[in-house]
Image 1: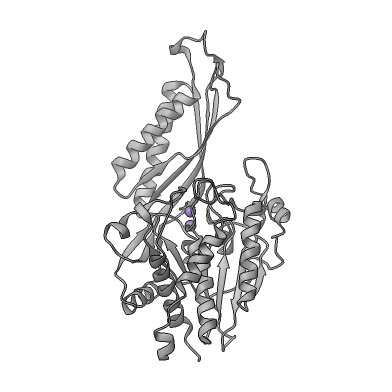
Image 2: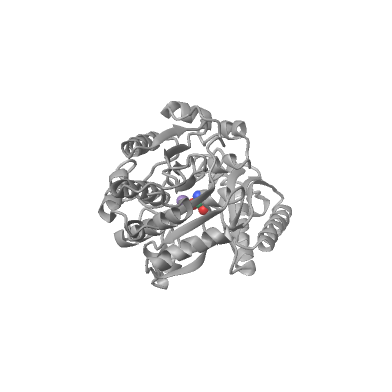
Length: 416
Ligand code: HGY
Ligand code: MN
Ligand code: MN
């Protein structure tokens, strides 16, 4: 590799500026970002991103699920591109870095290669994957899951949000139902830069996480059917209270995850009483369950244990508890050669680093089922994410983008 390429560093101030410029799309009073997928705020950041890519000389195309692909030509266009990128949608209480760092870090890599006049052998393609978060429409990592064939495009287009709006309608509303068939854009490999969203790198004072694996994820939709009745005149022993049932199940889930830990977590993130009223005993509740482990057997044990707990509580309380598995993502083991390439880049750049498992799911986890994929992590403050307090340092973001860039240069090859 030429000396110029070997010593190449991204423009830290430009990356930091882009991160904070795009944070205005969906900015919240607490300093976070609320940019639900396919919302007006998502449209605004997508338009910004498209223009920034076009200004960087990239060819942008959009697929039928709204994922955006920005291609930088290589000397040898017969080679499939290296894919880089992440997502621009956020959680309702999201931050400035989750997903955004990986997408804008990828843009910064391209901007830096342009400034240096470096041409790569293979092309490079940035991706903004639609609906990584899975908050408005389930499942998470939705578009990359369809891209790898885990779901059909029609199934995904028909998914509805809490207001009954379909993915297809939401895409049309913001003008991002693209022409390109999902899966058209091929890659030789995919590398994603992301904040760790956990406390390990910061606690160990490491700059780079070389991600070699990712937790598996089970998502469930739950429904409890008890019996509405008068809050005043119904004696406690006669009640079939859906909310108290859920409370008992939630505590049981917590105990199951603790018992099966330390590589097991369980969360009930949504619970909606149907027809709520202050003086009616809740008769019906819809809720969600998110279970994770890096170990497949532990995931299965979580599944069996929570189902057994639900059955026991339902019998004791004379209610029905239905639990449907709506998404099953096995644990990820990233491509060893690609993981080595990330590690070599971090080593050569002189950054402290360590191998790490991702607690969060990522689009790279889906891509890894059909091509070599890997991830680069950087620390986030106090390990906080999916919270408006999410924060990271400019130096760490730049370090992550430098590792991404040098990993890509190693994979793509430098023509000039
Ligand atoms: O749920 C996840 O792990 C990701 O943040 N969507
Ligand atoms: Mn993310
Ligand atoms: Mn996230």
